Image (cartoon, rainbow, N blue to C red; front, side, top):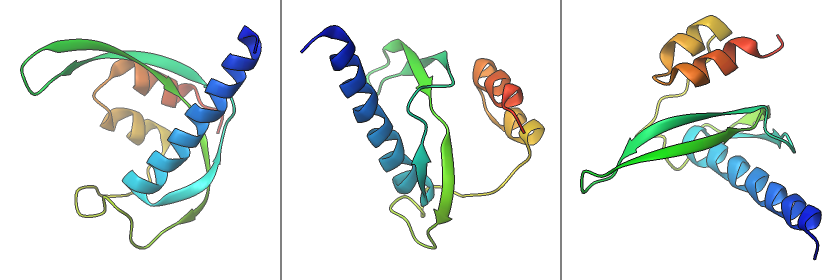
Length: 104
């Protein structure tokens, strides 16, 4: 398997993980973009106090359905916001800028 094929396979796996995360965290079903729309970095603190720099690739999820009950419904609240309000809700400035740059 060549490098391009490995990257394509990894992209499919990442899209699948994003789709699964959308269902688990927000009860959202739909189609995930094949390529990321951007990325951002943030610091994550582990339970033992270590801090790790995490680089996140961001994929679009074109929502087709919202489930009334989902795995993390007791821990998370789902709401619909406009771009400016959504960007203001996130802690990571780089992610907020990506949200603002999305086409309507």
